[in-house]
Image (tube, rainbow, N blue to C red; front, side, top):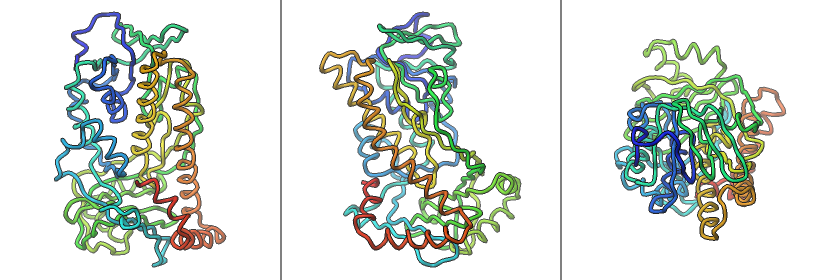
Amino acid sequence: MSLNKKVKKNLVFDIVVVGAGPTGIAFACGFAETNIRVAIVDKLPREVVANPKIDGREIALTHHSVKILKKLDVWRHISSQSISEIKEARVLDGSSKYFLNFNHQEIRKENLGYLIPNHVIRENLYKRLRKLPNITLINKAECVSVDVNKQYASIMLSNGKKIKASLIVAADSRFSKVRSKMGISVFSRNFNKDMIVCRMEHEKPHENIAYEFFRYNQTQASLPYIKNQSSIVTTATKDFSSNLMKMSDKKFNQEMQNSFNNFFGKMKLIGKRYSYPMITTYTKKFVSHRFAVVGDAAVGMHPVTAHGFNLGLKGLEILINEIKTAIKNKTDIGLTTVLQNYQFKLHRVAAPIYLATNGIVNLYTSTIFPAKLTRQFILRLVNTVKPVKRAFLSVLE
């Protein structure tokens, strides 16, 4: 991997990726062992990209996502001590003891998926990236302006350098600045809530089962990690979330124990608490001439179904395949006709998941009586009608 201190003022690449997050780096790694020259631009110093801080988020990976990480030659480098299996997933409504259950046996695999800390994934993606000679990391630089014409696209950077490329790919979060500079808007939904994530140790074993407890005024989720630890995700109003963040560790432990109705017995916070605003986004178009969005810049998911990063990996897999097909056919990779194939395929995958997730959140946080009846009906419908349940399970394979 090349570093920006070695590059000239005016640079020419085949693809420039804006954003050195996990999706951006994974996308670049997809061109290992090719002659495609890729630049990654990020405002953070290289040291920060290489050694990402713990951010509290644990990523639930589907089997298909693991397959993609294996193809990128990243999975084998992740320590098994950082990976936990998810055997089952259960959804509970309010105080009802009835739950919707998803079991690994239903998809005929050893588990439903895996849980890995976000910073561990990012760290190992970077380790793979640094071994690739056709990838250049341009750090401590931001995109100031974007210009696209028939022949090429160009980006002016804050460090005075100018990059020319056949294709620009935005991977700079759901609040993508580059996407905005291209004049592409998004459908946005602000839930006016915050998500608090943390790691907790608990008295009773989780038995590798993930839980989603819809409490109407707040949602509690637990993702099983190693030993008797779980990633705890609490989604609540901003006022209550603010209170949770300010609580002493002792009071917070008791609050979580009460919120889970003593389900896990005594609970103890491990490390810090982290808070994130609940805003979902769906980009109105994923491509334009010589430009594409991937990851959260394309679709920013609600975390309730834990499919944000999985969808990002699926999207970059589609785009990488379309680009490689175009190169094989000696076609310009920046042409709208090439990129529209990616848009069509990603929209077909992303739209149902995005709409269903937002619909679930709306339904299961509503306190009106008809919604409560509907919730119980849906849980039983999905549990008992095999084609419906199969549709939900298909995203895990």
